[in-house]
Image 1 (spheres, rainbow, N blue to C red):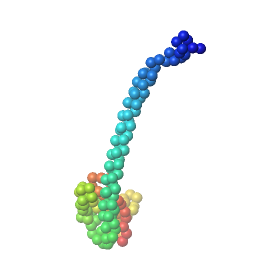
Image 2 (cartoon, rainbow, N blue to C red; image 1 turned 135 degrees about the vertical axis):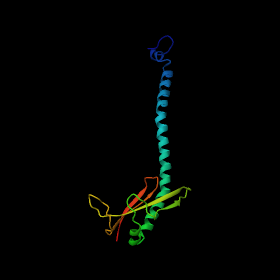
Image 3 (cartoon, rainbow, N blue to C red; image 1 turned 180 degrees about the horizontal axis):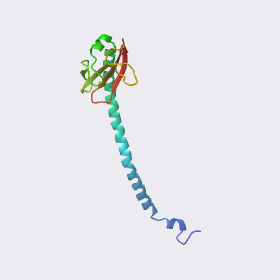
Image 4 (cartoon, rainbow, N blue to C red; image 1 turned 135 degrees about the horizontal axis):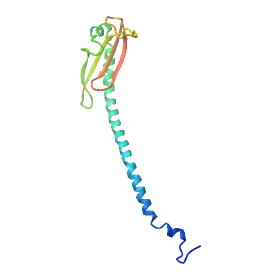
Length: 144
């Protein structure tokens, strides 16, 4: 089975093959690094957004709790509509130093399928608190 040199015929036919394999492996690793780095980048951006929301959500909730503790007649006097912020809106500074506007929207609510909002007092108020410039908002209904 051995030839004169003492080597098997198989090992001489595969000589130099490891360089091609190394080149192919390097090429495959190089191709997979780009998507891997993009995945890590979007993951780190998501973590930063989450950290910001962890800071902002209690500010939003505290404003909503403050309004829910108010008397219905006080809230009714501030009704401005679904698109106009009421005078109950304010600006706060977050723990990371950003200035955030908490906008409050109040409207009378009647729940009719054709038009959810009423022009006169129905005994039910729609209340929305949102952080301006973000998608963060809380909504609820308040009864008399």
